[in-house]
Length: 219
Image (cartoon, rainbow, N blue to C red; front, top):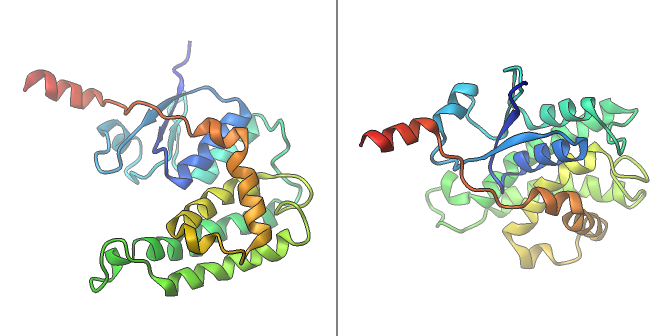
């Protein structure tokens, strides 16, 4: 009997969220290991020196440590809702934009004081918020013409992208709630309420490293 797949995850990380959704829709069984990013277990660091969630260790020992790659791997095993679109090149461009330039602006918008010592903890960087909104305007234009990013039904693009927009929306809720992106608001609300998302947001106990257990036993 083979060992189960293992997923190192952090509940609120958008990268980990989308990996978990891909695994859930594909019906992949795995051992969930919830970690604290400030106290990463030795097993996770050994699996991938990259040391960022999610990290998937397949039952054969192969490591997949990019969230989009985990989604693709899962859907290659089983794609019951046809998330993979015929135009994968266009879909991939949409997804790479959100996890690249958009995510960089979002991080600097949300954690402004980390990058600018003149700012206080909790301050936001409006310049980076505005830069991120350029990408949101592109999505708004798409959603003004179709219900989802790739047409009239949800696809991998929607599920891979919405966790990042969810995180962005939560930074300044009062500002976000103004109807500046009406189609995007409707789209986001649908995915926030979707069973697949609420299902992968259940809380898990923290994974206790065997290395930590050994140290505790000998101390």
